[in-house]
Length: 208
Image (tube, rainbow, N blue to C red; front, side):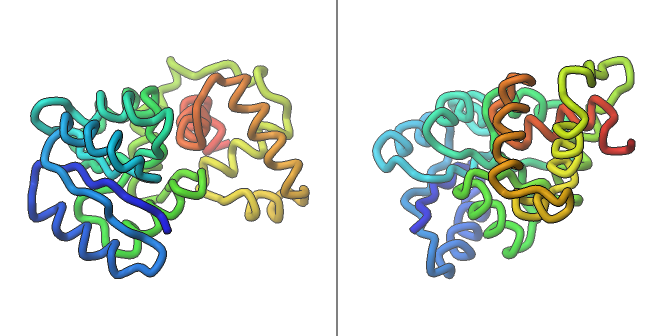
């Protein structure tokens, strides 16, 4: 079972998310709380696999909660497009994915399962648009940090492909893809796939 903590100051959002997730046979909601401080307390008590965190919450915002929880809990930040300026901070603080509050049930479930599996939800409707916001040419990092093959893998991560899909696309073994990703994370000093995708956008790899 995937255990989930929901933190949002809007009761309707919490209730809606809980109803959707608890219909799934492999997901259980261990707590839903209205503020950041309660989220940290509940996480320490229940040790959830995944935390769904709103950005704007009383007491402690979702960005700070993400920083506190991400070492032990996979965090999916719940956001809206008018909060683009917070995305980079959330990435640095260890967020594993992003979800809009108006996301449908299927996307919500997909985000939770992806985070629990150690992947990030990179959806064209959500993450790619927000990552593109930071793809300014003046901030482009040095592509020479990565080998040509590593760049190929990174490009596919930014497109939202899973490890298995990347292996099929690039005619690599699954273990080779995982080795490349581990090397990339070390070289780029990023925590997860969202960080890799963000780097790819800023480096201009996605459009190359």
